[in-house]
Image (cartoon, rainbow, N blue to C red; front, top):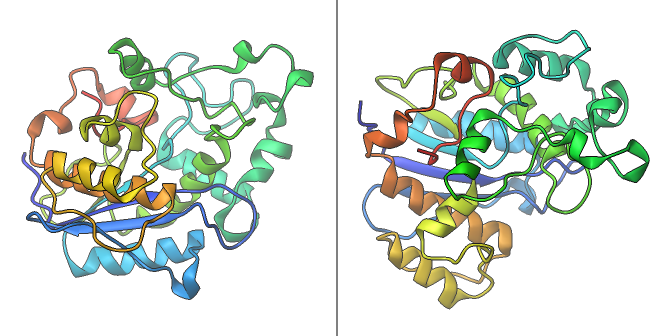
Length: 285
């Protein structure tokens, strides 16, 4: 079915330790062509819990498509387990509950899972051995790479600025708390009414907005304006945001543009098993 959302929210996420995170940015736009706007955080800086609270309140206000920039599950298909050799659930919602119960990190953090509870599965540096031995990807990521999208990061790589490990496992805790109230695609089917949460990759939005491969970051207002114009949006006229805010703004406009297109909801490579265990990145077709 063709989605019928009236608002589109993109959240640039963070797995950093602590209770306030400058790396989190939230942008939202309505149907039409108005420019997306950044949502101001309570107290000026977002916490992960405040994002949960905002989402649950916003989801009741209008049917909203919420996009989060983290991996919704570890790879499962290729190896038959999320953390092979360790007893863990075999479907994503149960795994989210497992992560949430295991981690007592502040503000829905999950660094303890990587650093202590399941340390041997994650690459933190040369002392862990050969990095290539940790580079396992989900079916969606393999499909995206094969189609020329680029080589995605893996949740088992916990080193460097580009790593998505801590953000993703912290995000799984968010999903555990949100899913009883707002369905999460494709683990849940498209609802006939109400809001929905999807996984996004901001680089897909940037490419659709005309940004060259490898140069997705927009660090000035003309670049943000050009990207939004390409996506059929009015230009952003407020103060220059940081990288996270720019990513969220452009991705919200992209979500609005592509959400009505049925092909984005029915990827040919998305099987029921993948949908239950690994999920899929919205925008990968």
